[in-house]
Image 1 (cartoon, rainbow, N blue to C red):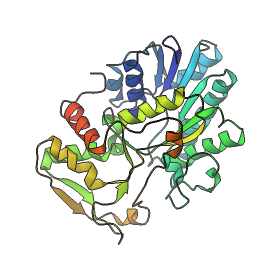
Image 2 (image 1 turned 180 degrees about the vertical axis):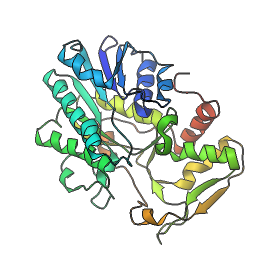
Image 3 (image 1 turned 30 degrees about the vertical axis):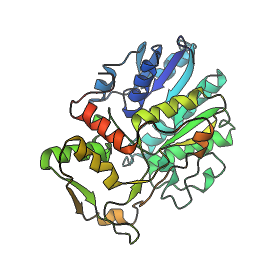
Image 4 (image 1 turned 120 degrees about the vertical axis):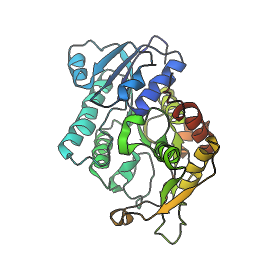
Amino acid sequence: MQKNDLILVTGAAGFIGSALVWELNRRGFERIIVTDVMGTDEKWRNLVPLRFEDYLDASELFGRIESNTLQDVRWIFHLGACSATTEKNASYLMENNFHYTRRLAEWALQGGRRMVYASSAATYGDGSAGMEDGHEHLERYRPLNMYGYSKHLFDLHAKRHGWLDRLVGLKYFNIFGPNEDHKGDMRSVVHKAYAQIQKTGSVELFKSHHPDFRDGEQQRDFLYVKDAVNATIHLATEPQAAGIFNIGSGIASTWIDLVTPIFHALDLPVSIQFIDMPEALRGKYQYRTLADTSRLKSCGWAGPEFTLDAAVRDYVSHHLISDRRLGD
């Protein structure tokens, strides 16, 4: 990737998309076309500190492609999607997450452009069929919601058409960090817990209803967004990288591990209250997720720069307390 290369980032005002543009700026890249659907939320604020060449509404993108005004684009980071796992409108999800991605991939491949796209760990369903990346076992996964299926369907389409030897698909696990304020109920537990602690001095976590896990010791693979975008750029610029990759820390940590550093960053005593998990969630709840990052590491990624403790402290101290976005 050269400084004068033209880069397209979709979903660029969103959480991971804006963090990616921030990291590209840090590395000296400013020839960036950003696209998104702004809507009525506050994610436009994520773009304010960032440097880029042009903004396009996502609805304009294919018109510009068809008019051949984006021929100079060499790199595509496709992070735009409806990312709400609770979205029920299947037609909307299929149009935004499957058809849009397919059209963009066709254009990228026809023009010899490098394209990295966001798949999702939600494609793995309840995890009972494993969470192996690559594409050898794609057909055995059964997503639990329509969002996961819309992402999974493109993975399958890319495999059937032989595209995965030229595309890079990313299955992000539990990503948290600055620039997620606009995500409402889809915000990370760190963001929600910080607000709870500011209000009550305590945080609520679900009790465990599994005999092998004590309250608060359910496990997730958490990764700081600053590390996630580093991994994203690493795979984009690694010539040997192709196919689908898990993007995670490779470490399973507990919810207690996640929220405790918030109290430490605020110089407050740790206070955690355990509440009953809603009945509707108990049969679907995943008690442990862990990204197998062996493929990612085999492509030369050294692993996250931040430990979980350091990541949470950085997020709280440098972003949440001061309400600063990346680039401020």
